Image (tube, rainbow, N blue to C red; front, side, top):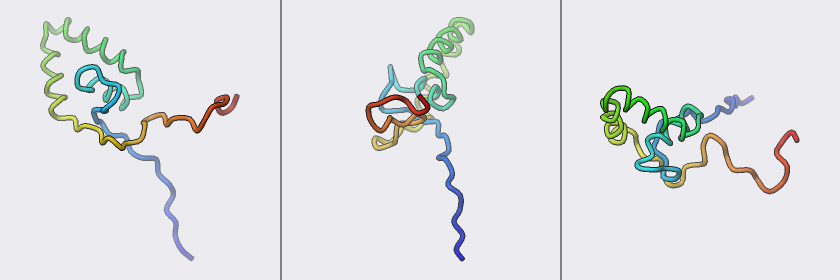
Length: 91
């Protein structure tokens, strides 16, 4: 008898994507990590920059430096592309 470990979903990684980026991909990476729209992350970041008199703007280059870039062959995460045309599952 052999033991087969259960399949685990890949763990989330905070990375800057090579696609879907405006400047360096920081907001897009944060949006993917927390499964929210990157536009919302950008708006929150802009408001935080205004409220903190620009102090929050210092966080962007720091995150740009610390967040690794996503590999070019990385799968589309968190939502893989559909297999083909047709109605969505469950429709």
